[in-house]
Image (cartoon, rainbow, N blue to C red; front, side, top):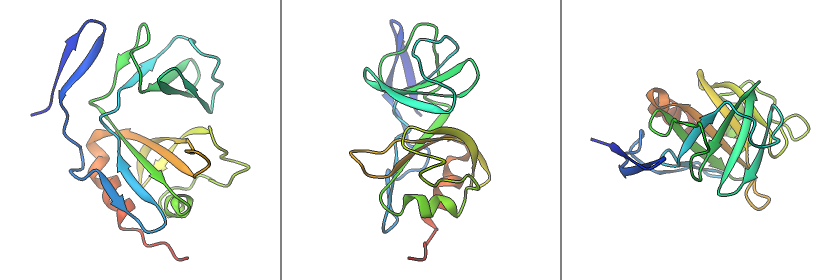
Length: 167
């Protein structure tokens, strides 16, 4: 049974189980990794100048906004007034040259570079599941973070790994 023990102002994960079991999925031209154990914080104070629909690196984490007056912080220590969503939100990373093609099979959002450039953030459906999507390229390699309800993690993971994109 996963547990979280509060110590001071943050949450320390003593034992965190993946919502999908496996941690990495090989999708050919892309790889899917389960990063659900990363701390996730929701805040309602404008602590960083991150505009709606965008993301930016801050200290030890990434902050993004997809709703007016609301921000999500992934990684790092908890900001003042934050709500810990680590155990209720799954987080996957889809990385590689085929990442966009795979997402296009299960997401209606236009993921082209002019519409969804690096650091873009949006709320959309992925495999029919409400998902916060952040384009977060790693050293120039195409990469997307997908944050969704932990209850739908297995369904979404299975749909993504089942896709065989046509090259």
